[in-house]
Image 1 (cartoon, rainbow, N blue to C red):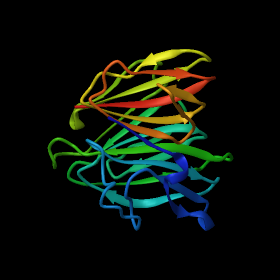
Image 2 (image 1 turned 45 degrees about the vertical axis):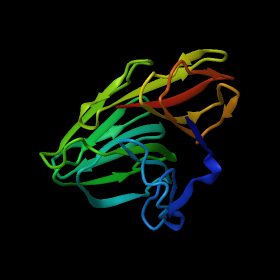
Image 3 (image 1 turned 90 degrees about the horizontal axis):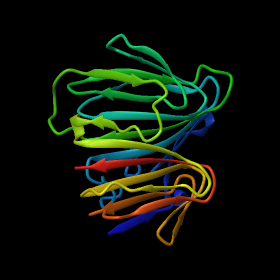
Length: 217
C-alpha cells in the first residue's frame, strides 16, 4: 500500500516572527491529528528553516532517536552531554535522547539554514544518551539505526537515474529536493510517501534530486 502526502498539506509551525518556520508531516506540538501520529517507528519528519541568528534554545528530549539532515547552511548543535558540533550538508547527525538530554540548535551563520529532522521511536526506552555525526556520508551508503530497528538510505540522483526502494515491511520516503517518479506518481520537494510491504518499487529522477528513504522493520 502506498500513501502519498504532499508538501502543501504539512502542518505549519515554528515562530516566523523569530525567524523559525517549521513544516510537520505528523502531529506535532499544538497540531494534533489522531490519525497521523506515526508511521512505523517514524514519529516526526520536520522541515525546519532558520534565519541567520535564529534557533531553538535549550530544550529537553527523552526516549527518542533524533536524526538530522542539513539541506543548506550550517546547524550549530550543543547538548548537555558536552557535544558541540557544526552539521553541514551531507552530514548525518544522530542524538539518542534515551533517559533524557537537553540540547540547543541554532543558525549561527550568515546564511539561511534549512534542515530535515526526523524522530524515531526506540525499540527500548531509557538508557544513556548518545551522539554521533557522520561527516559527508557517501551516496547509497546506508546509515543503520539499530536503536529503532531502522536504516536510512540517502540517495542523490542524477537526471534519469533510477534507484530501488528497499523491499521492507515499511518504507518512509521524503523528497529533499528535485522531482522523482514512483510508478506513475510524480513527487516534488517536501512530498513524502508511506509504503507498506514494499516490493519491487523504483524511484526515477526527472532531474537532479535528493531523497531520504527509511527502511523500517
